[in-house]
Figure 1: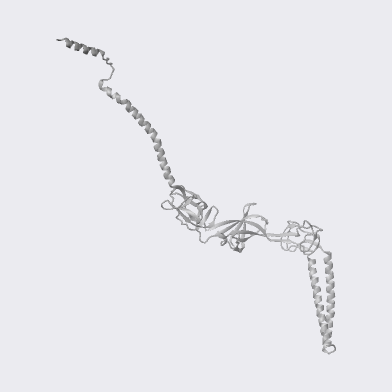
Figure 2 (figure 1 turned 90 degrees about the vertical axis):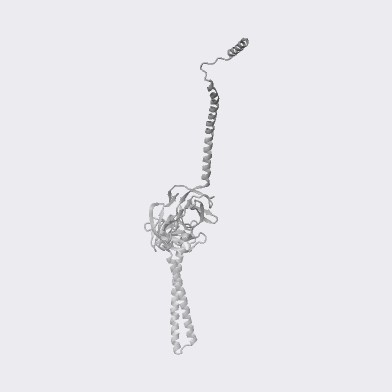
Length: 421
């Protein structure tokens, strides 16, 4: 009866003997499922970290790109505020220094140069003898003319006496009227011959006086083209192959003339009495006071300029004729406008334009009229208000309505404030 139980017990014992032995340090059966999830969780966390590390630069790059695109939509610009133009400005023009009087001295009679008295650089007074021309033929002609005049005088005196006697005889009816008239007519003819002879003597005397070449005014001899023995002819025909025709050249240098060409825009401001001074490179820092003497009172249609003459006192001889000088004119404007640097101007087909930042920070284009030119900045006569925020250095591609971002910077250019917000 107990045999089956014994067999069953043996089987159970046999099964237990085949089972592996349990380690003493093994975790309890309840901890085994927890180890199964630790590794996947660790792998998932590592993947999340790696994903975060990879996405962060991309997100930062995307954010920077978004900011760059937004910045590019608004053009960064600097602003200049118009300022009142100066009431008095200086106009600098080039000028050529010329002598107040300039003359070429030619021979008025033909002959040989007997002597010359002045060389280049000599200062002479009006009437001083520069040279003497020897004219023996002309002297002989003058003596002959004087002899002819004496003969004509004698003939006239005889004819005059005869005519008076015949007029007395006519009173007593001693001679015929026709004979008396003939004597009177002969006397008038002799008078005309005498006048002709006297005129010839005067003409030759004048020519003989030209044997002495004299200075026409006070000045400096700048050229001498003759020498002793040179043949000169009346009218300036050269007697030597190398001679240009003039004997001397004289210039008046105590007062000098400076001619300038004033642009049409400034012509109305220049008139006699306008303050002016000269500067030259050979005298740095020195000013030569001058005055506007006269102008052409007409605009040259070719250059659109006004020719103006400026006179400068040169008694000390510091300035030399023919030199280059810079003429400084002070121009006074009755109603000065606003000024802007030239860098703020746009030259468009419809005229000179400025770009203005509107209240909404969008570009507005305004056509303006240029007044006086100060060099690096100009006067804006019309089209601009004092409160306008003018964009400095605008690009050629700028258009109306374009959004701008005003840079927060402040600087100064020729007295014009450049400011941001």
